[in-house]
Each structure stands twice: as C-alpha cells, then as structure tokens.
Image: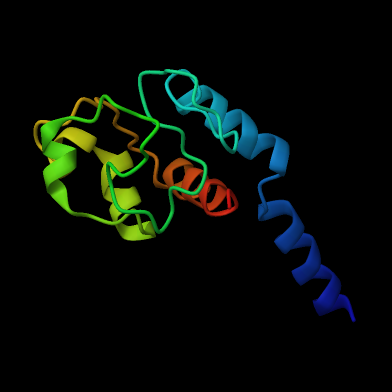
Length: 118
C-alpha cells in the first residue's frame, strides 16, 4: 500500500497541469497562433486547431505559408513537431517561422497540448 501511495504521489507531482500547459502555449505560441476551432483571424501563423496529423501548409484559411513549408510535404506528427519546435529554420530551411525551443520538456508539453486540439 505504501508503495502504491508513493508511486501515486510521484505521478501526480510530475504531471503538468492543464493551466500550466495553457501558460506554456500562451508564452511560446499564442502571439502568432490561435487554437480556437474555426478561428480565421489573420495572424502571423496558422490556426493550430487539429494540426497534429495534418499535412503542412494545408489550412485553407491561412494564406501566408512560405514556399519552403508548402513544398516540404511533411505531416505534423510528434517527431516532426519536435524537430520544428527545436529549430524551425534548420528543420525546414526557408520557413517564415523563427522559433527555437531548447527545452525538450517544454516542446513535448506543447506537442501534448496540440494533440488534444481535435
């Protein structure tokens, strides 16, 4: 029983809360991106609602994709999102996004958040 409680405490203490994830997104992404379903407000970047599993540069409501991202042919899966958030310009040279996140835990939490937007 003690072992179970210790494991439960460790699990709870290592989980990031929904509010913390929301703050990570606001701090790192919300200046340029919306995550509201159907939001077509023009921003520097496309709406990220449903981005996980979507082919890059296919959100028809966003018209400012770089040629590099249009030609990339990638699908936004966890691996590609992690590379993108690590250094977008290195992953797809010629992109308009100049974001780099060195902290893997921040990247992974943002990706986990994006996976919930469907």
